[in-house]
Image (cartoon, rainbow, N blue to C red; front, side):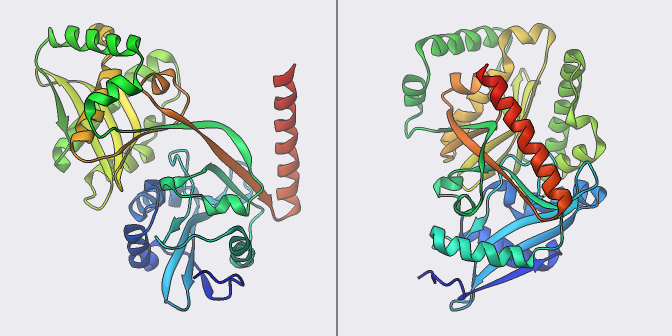
Length: 365
């Protein structure tokens, strides 16, 4: 039973991912977590990106002193922001789509207990100018996010989308798709199959995964260059990070390709974690293949494969691209907050609030 005083809980802060690894992995295995707060994800992120940016792990662990069991873990980091200020945040660097604690299965702190614990957490955090959490989901893993009980949050402009896969695959088309979308998909599959035999190729060995990943790299670089848009995979450290995720046997990273006569025409890169598929990256061939909408077809094919392999949720994650709604995705709010600790942080917070106010005012004109 949760102590209302919060004094039956011990709070520790770790600066080493390795030292806390066994406890972290045990807690996420037995409890609730998003893949973006898994040890494998944060380890790869810090190894390939974080340490190059001067970030330092700041892992908060709460343990029940009566049962001697860990009940919550916050994978935070301390590092410089773009302006050289000291910021505490979740592991992100632009690639983590959700921010939420790792919690034990039976740990459901009410608002009163969480506020007491949060005050004690703040006392033990390292010195920083401010704390900033973004992309906070309301119900990570279908459980209320306890951080929303203690933080003064605002609704983010970012939205996320996911879809519960039905018990019977045929119900997906009938209940989640419009008549127009069903017809559109049938037509595109029929035309694509005139080009050759279609199939899914899974990166089920490190070598095959890297071969598919290299094609994803080329397809994305060509597409983003044509669109004259910045591509995160033009940065070597991000390429190394995503490569590591699909070659580490402890990582939830998976990569899959849609093929026509063994030619790869579209690729999906995602995470399979706790019965949920989280889509991160996609790519597809242009030129003559574009007329078939291979990016759309690879998602539907992957959904069917996941359904057949016992995965219950397809998570499109953040971004409000129209195809997510068309494929049946449900919209969810995300939240953000900023907590200043120093005059520098308060100045930044005031400027940020002013910018939000101006945007809100402009939106009403």
